[in-house]
Amino acid sequence: MSDSEKKISVALICCFSNAKVRKHLPLDSRRLYRLLRRLLGMPTKSGTYGDLAAWDTHLIENMRLRDDIDLHVISSHSGLKKSVCSFQEDGVDYHFVRSDRATLLKRLIPSASLWHRLNPMRPVVRKLVSQIHPDIVALVGAENPHISGTVLGLGDYPLIVKCQTIYNNPDRAKSGKVNLKNAYVEKEIFKDLKYVSVTNLMHYRLFRKMNQDAINFYWSLGNIMPEFEIKEKTYDFVNFAMGMSQKKGYHDSIKALAIVKKQYPEVKLNLVGGGAEEVRKELEKLVSDLGLQDNVEFTSFFPLQEDLFNHIQHSRFALLPCKLDSIPGTIRQSMHYGLPVVCYETTGTPKLNRDKECVLIAENGNVEQLAEKMMVLLSDSSKAEELRRNAKEYAERWKNDEKMIAQIVDNFKAVIANYREGTPIPEELVCDPEHT
Image 1 (tube, rainbow, N blue to C red):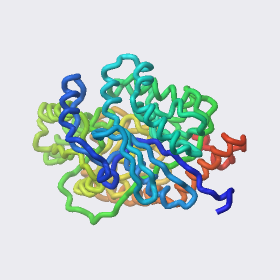
Image 2 (spheres, rainbow, N blue to C red):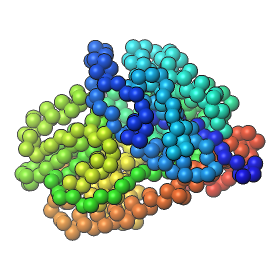
Image 3 (cartoon, one colour):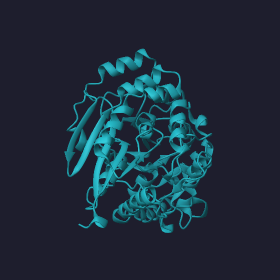
C-alpha cells in the first residue's frame, strides 16, 4: 500500500453496548449503583445490561471491513469494575471507560462548567487518544455530556461530530426537564467546531444558531435490521423505545387509546421499553385512571435488539408519536418490518409521504387526531396494506451499507487533508439541508 493509500487511524468516540463487547467487560451487579441513585433522589434504572445505540454497532461493523481504516473505538459503559477495559476483536481496538462516577458527580455538582472540568472520564480519554495518536477523532452524538465532553482539549487532532440530535432545542422543555449540563457541554463542543454532520433541517437550523462556520457533511448512521419470519399478531399497536418518556409519546399513546377504546373496546396496545422506574409507575397509573388495564400490556426493555425486533412483529401496527426527533429510528425500523405507522408531525416525518403515503401523521401533540389515525388502520385493512407496502419500499433506500460507509471514509479523508494541509473540501461532500 503506497503512502497515498495508507490506512488512516480513526478514534471513534461514542456510547454503545452490545452482546459482542459485553462478553469482554467486567460488569458489576449494579446493586450499589442503584442504591446510590435512590439515596441521591435520581431516577432508578434497571439493573440489567442491554444493547445500546445499535447505529454505533452498525457503523463499527461496516468500518472494520474497510482495508483503509485502522479503527479504535472509545466508548463509555456503566457498571465497569475498573476505569478502563481494553481489548481487540475482529481487528478493532476497543477501549471502554467507566461512566458511573461521572454520572453521579453530575448529580452532586451544581455548576455545569465545574462538573465538565472535573469529569473523571476526560483525563482517561485524553490519555487513550494520546496513546492511539489517530489521524482523526470522530464523535457520534454531542448530547451525552459525560462522553462527548471528553473531546474538548484532546490536542492537535481534527474532530468531526456526527449529530444524532441537538439537545439545545427550545421545544425540549415541553416534553420534560432540560438538563443544563447536557446543554452546556453541547454548546462548548459546537462553539469552535470546524467539521460536523447534521443532516435534517430542524437540527441543522438549531446547530447554526450556535455555529455559523462549521463545514457540514453527509453522514448516514444506518441501522442493523435482521430478518425474521412474520409472527402471529397479539396486539394492535406497539410503542417501543430504549426508555419510556413523554418525548417518545408514551403518555399520548395511552390517552389516544382511551379514545379509540370507545369504538374498539378490545383494542390492545403494547408498551415496550426501559428507563426510569418512576416513569413506568406514572404510565401504569395513567392506564389505571383511564380504565385501560385490559387494553395495555407493558413489556420490559430487551437486552438484545434482535429480540426487540422479533417482539414488535407480534403487533399489527406501530404507534410512535415521538415529539422531537426528525425521523425516529423506531419509525424506520417499523417501516422495514412492515408495521404501518401512526406518528406525529416533526420536521422529518412529512418527507416520508413525499412520493407515496407511507405513514399516517397527526398534528404534534394532538391526541384526538392521533386516535383518529389509529382508527383508520383498525377500520380499513386495504389502507393498512397500502401503507405497509409503500413503507417497505421506502425502507429499502436505507439499506446501502457499502455506499454509506464509503461516504463516511471520504468525509474523514477530506477532513484530515483540510485540517493538515488546507486542502479544500470537495463540493459533493458538503451537505446543505436548506436546499435538499
